[in-house]
Each structure stands twice: as structure tokens, then as C-alpha cells.
Image (tube, rainbow over all chains, first blue to last red):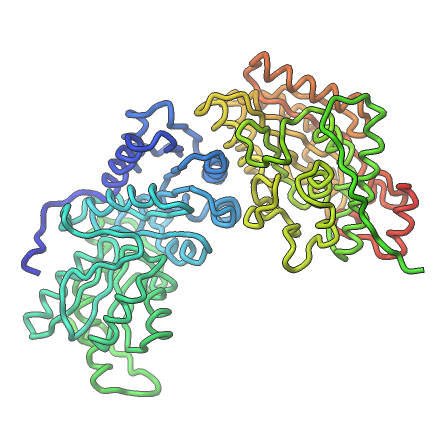
Length: 335
Length: 292
């Protein structure tokens, strides 16, 4: 942990916008489609630099997604980005048939995702797209943890053939990865070694996981922290190693607890090396207006829930119980 | 006597023809449709028969540029079947153009066949430019292709796409129309098969989309209304599109073709129940007699 430092705060969407410019400079066949909120999802950087390869489609996400497929079928690497609420759901059928089934080079940016979009409220706080996107065959899904990883991930999905989805956020979040931090699609990154419990997180919850590990350390518990930025294809090896070495797992995500990272990890663990798991996320609820920090507390998306869940999952492992689980409230474990 | 089905291996050249030359081609295609749907025991008879005349001109009248020996030829024009359920017709046309053997027509909709129930790009069937079948998407694919050609690659390729009339009840179709006009896609030729039939009944009863021509006019299209069974009108309509493209008219073209569902088969004509049904053995016999 000592080598991981807080380097300031910046929104992941800036990483996406800057990554697009890098791709534009590198490849002539990268085109970007705008959906009227280009300044919010930072496709405006690309627009300023490469106006001849930027096309505004207006507030028409279904059309933009399918037009992107048409560009891809013409040899282009086609990006379209909007808020995740609209670029993963409004266009769901288009993503399924024209993008995923066609297996074409379309890259979708899901911006302003999660509860931390804040004051806009529940309509704009997409908390379900990981579960939908990861069920689409041929699809790659990346949820970067900070600004720099978002930039690296954007470049990486541009260079990987096939349909890809990258999920990022609006608000400024901790920066802690550096140029030296490895990033590879399909590879989870162990940020902190430990053998008492594994915490697997994605997006802004990775930082919370590191904070939780730090607190657990004070109790003499060594947590392994894994940045699982690629949800699909998931890194089976790293997860199975974590299950075997630690014997219990906590997942953490800014997403519903159903079908997201937790579900993806559970699928791997159950099949390969079953161990007790706890899933930290939004518990089957819609969001509401508020500041990001307030909402993270209200919806249980802070290090404290991860910490409490770690204690709980360790207890479950050590007691080796069978049968119905005795559910204790998270509050019992908070200090 | 049981019906024995065989497909000839006849192919047709893609060249300028006199109007009367197309009846032979259209007849062969219609027979392919009946035979392949009869063998498949499922599929869409009505709309495929209804658009056979348009396909005959588009694929064999020297309108579209393509090369069956080089399906990925970079200068080819592209055709996107937005009404994906009409694929038995497209499969027939592509095989009669020489993209692949007519032998494949025996296996429409069968396990392991490249001739999927709706076109599947993953099957890598030569001549298929995209998966289609979820209505209203193919036309946006075509818009994306036309944008890529005209605005990025700045080449002279053209994109043709066909939607049904029930299909344009899908709202996203009008997003595509808006974009086609906004980007001045004079390299896009949109064909609307207006047979006034959809699964539940007459289009005018299920959800009226009329007036179609005025809608497209207001969206900024060059609108051409034709009888979709009159070869002269079909030829002239495509000629007008080509002239629109060559003169860089700055707007997309739509051809609204009045057609008869089930055209050519007496008991299917103008009957919407034939939207999504195949002929049984008895019906196939009668149909093939009608088409002899």
C-alpha cells in the first residue's frame, strides 16, 4: 500500500476524452459520434482536434449506435458516447443486434454512470448497465478505476477489435495509478497483496477498497486488493488465485448488487473454487438527488461497507457454516 | 404425388436490360422463394414475392455495382436489407448473381446453414453486408455506411436499403431519415416496400403511417412514387437516384414502391396472412404452377 498514493482528483471522463485524441492522432480511421452532450462526456476534445471525423447525431442514441455499426462495417473504428443511462439502455436492441451480433468495431462510452452523477437524480444514475452489457456475446466491458486508467483503457479498446463498452463517471475521483501501473484488457491488477480476505473492486470503489484494506490492516487483517477493471472477459486466473489464497471474497462496485461485478466474480468462484462472498453495491434501489459523497454514504458505497463486509465474510469462512446464512446487519460490523 | 423440389443452377448477368427481360428473372426468383420456404417449413412468403420485381432490376439491371467473385471489392455498392425477414429473396438473388451455389437454397433456415432465418453477418455469407431482422436498424446501418463513404472516404460508392412499410412504424427509422437528410446523403437510396400489409392486418388499420411520401418530403428527401411491379417505373426510379447521386443533389432519395403482397401467387396476393407463413405441399404445388 505504501507505494499507492493519492495523486489528486480528476473525473474518469477526462481520461476517456484524452484517450480519444490519442487514438485520433494514431489512427486515421477513428471516428466519433456525438449525442448532444459532447462537452459532458468529453468527446468535445476529439471534435476540436478532428472536426472532419466527428459527427453530431443529436439526441438519437438508437440511431447513433446503429450508424456507428454502419461506419464499422465500412472499416472504421467508431466511437459513440453518451450518458450510460442512454448509451446502454435506450439503444439496447441496437447494441445487441447491430453491434454485438454483427461483431463490429463499435466502441461505446457510458459516461455519467453510477450514483455519483449526483444532483441529476435517479433517471440519470445508471446502476444496471454492467449486468446488461456483460451478457452480450462478443462484447468487451471495461470499468476503469481512475482518470489515468480510463485514458489507458480508452486507447486499449480502440486498439482491440470488436464491440467494446467503457463505463466512466462525471465527478472528480481519486487518482492513484501511474504510467507504470500495468493495464491490460482482461487482466485484473493486484494492487495490494494479502491472504486474509480478497477485495475485488472496479471503478471508483477501487480506491474505497484500498482505504478499507488500510483499516483492516490496523486490526491485523491483510486484505488483497484487486482492481478488476475488465468485467468481460473476466480474469479467471487472478480471481481463482484470490479465492484459493484468501478463502473469502468481497466485491465492491458502484452498481446494483444484481448481475454486476459481484455476479461476474461469483460465476467464476462458484464454478472453480467456491468460497464465501459478500457483494457491496447498491441494494436493489433507485438513486436520488444529492452530492456524490452524500449518495455514496446513503447507498452504502464507502470503505466502511467494504470493511464490514470483509469482517463478515471472514467470519463466515472461519465458522464454516452450512445451511441458511444468519444475516447480520452491516452496522454490527462498523466501528 | 409428393412435390419434388429442385433448384436450377441458372445465373443472371448484372447489365442494362429492356423492361420485358426482367420477367424471366423475377419468375425464377419467385420460384426459388416458394421452393426454399416450402422446404424450410417456415418463413415469410408475402413480402418476398412482392419485392421480387424490384430486386430483379436492382441486382440484374446494371444498377448496383458488385462483383460476386470479389464480394469484398472495395468499390462495390452496398445493399442492406433492413426488412431482414425478406432474406429468402435476397438469398435467391445473391445465388442467381453467382455469389454462391443455388445448392445452398435447399437449406434455408436449417441447422448449420449460412442462410439464417434472418441475415446473420456471423455466417459470412458472401453479399450479406450486415445482420438485420430487428426492424428499423438496417436503415441506420445504411446511413452510417453512406456517411462513411461520402463524408470520410469521399468515394463514389452508393448504398441501397429496403424497409417495409410496417417497419417504418419504428421510431428510430425517422431518426435515420433525419440524419440522412442532415448529412445530405445523395449516395443513399432508400426503398420502401409499401404493400399495406403487416402481421396483424392492413398497415392503415394497425398503425397508419400515411401519407408516406409527404413524410419523406418534409424530411428533405427526393421522393419517387412507383408501381413496384412495373419494370419501366422501377428502372426509371433507380436511374433518377443515380442521376441524383452523380449531380450531387445534396439530398437522399426514397423510392416508395406500391406492391402487392404475395405477387405472382394467386391465393397469396394482397393477403396479409401470408406475411410470415410458408406454403405447405399442396399450396407450394399451386404456387409453382402459377409461377410456371
